[in-house]
Image 1 (cartoon, rainbow, N blue to C red):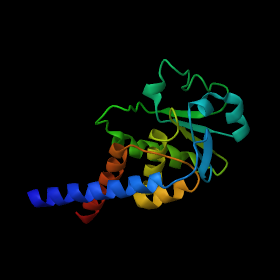
Image 2 (image 1 turned 180 degrees about the vertical axis):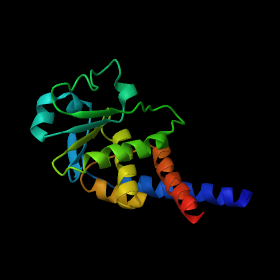
Image 3 (image 1 turned 90 degrees about the vertical axis):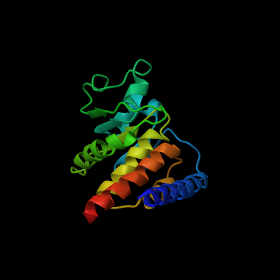
Image 4 (image 1 turned 45 degrees about the horizontal axis):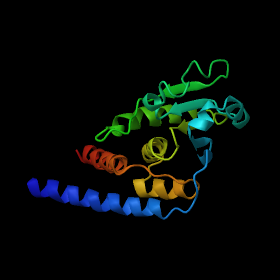
Length: 186
């Protein structure tokens, strides 16, 4: 059992390093907002606060992947979008070491998936800079609802947007796959 844990840890480290190298190969520059999947946009706080831009883009759903980070600094939330016919979901993520982003994978994926049941809807997933928290939740969505492996999801996204999820978030995405595989095998 100890050997299995050790092999798993080594395998994860190799996979995380491989994924980090993949991300570093992306030569795209950071942009405020990008459509990375049909009707799914990754953006930053600037985009989330720009009510005119959101209306022009036709955004109907907002997933704030940094609700705790933004509290007090940026006036966003369900009240901010009042009168815009936007459904809002805020997740209290943080940059703290050891933060369990995995607890938000399923709720975020469900929010996005439910929004996209209507092909007219458009979802903005944002965090402060639009490169770490929000892409991590998008990757989880692609893995959960489009049966992608984490490397496939990353390859798809980096064709359109520069992202840089933390090593901790990448590890959690990999662990999510291992856990799901384990449950499937039971």
